[in-house]
Amino acid sequence: MIRTLSLIAVGVLALASHANEAELAPRATKSLMLNLTELADGRYVAVGERGHILHSDDQGQTWQQAPAPTRATLTAVARSNGHVFAGGHDGVLLVSNDRGDSWNVLRSEPSSDQDNPILDIHFSTESIGYAVGAYGLFLHTNDGGQTWQQEEVAAFDLPDFGFPHLYRLITLRDNSLLVVGEAGFVARSTDQGANWTRLNVPYEGTFFTARQTASGALIVAGMRGNLFRSADNGASWSHINTGVHSGLNDIAVGTGEVIVVGMDGMMLISRDDGLSFARQQRSNRKAIAAVELVGTEQLLIAAEDGVSVQSLAAEQAK
Image (cartoon, rainbow, N blue to C red; front, side):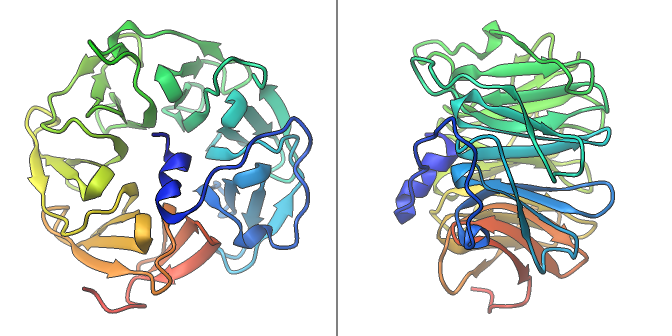
């Protein structure tokens, strides 16, 4: 299932989308938030249900809501070349040219036969970017996001399965791309998305996220606490025992730590480059959808109960 629907496990369902503008809500900072990103000047932008878009200029201590031209649930946000992009349900793709204060619609397909939400947006350079999503949705831009082209990538069509939902796309240190999704799907491109080669990860469940660690190791994670690590650029993979059975939604990497967050308020902390993890859990057990490191001991999280700052040492590791 797509990431927003994975929150059904804790009783939260992504709301139906509407074409109208998002309402400015007094409690928007406490609503379901699904992704966030840091801008070049230190501002953070977070997106979530009902088209809510928030921004913070004090490292997540306080947040303001920006007006948005949609009520569709927003699941992805990214920055490039002075612009901010947000995407989500109804295939909506938004752009802001003023640090997230105001937004315009670049793309929307509310009348489509099936909802093809955008689940991740990523720029490999200031000009080249990608948006991926449900049923193998793949968009790319070569002009910094001014125009986007949709492609059907044959390599994403899995035998006896079809096109999987794609949840995360990242750029690796060698400038290749890595994308992960349903049915254990992990694929790599060495030519900016023109061609893809599937990597053999010994798991058939959904991967929601991927990152590269400080040493260059690859980590992919997803359903039921499953996490795999590769030290040879994806040629072979080791299953890492996380000790949890909750879905893992996002990964943040610092200079000495790897942080993995997910359902039930789980936070997994590794200080050995992802070889082993200690477990922390939010006292309210509210699901965490996305995470950013702020400094060395603070996490900024987008979660079932909004956006907040969380200390790595705030709760006893278990």
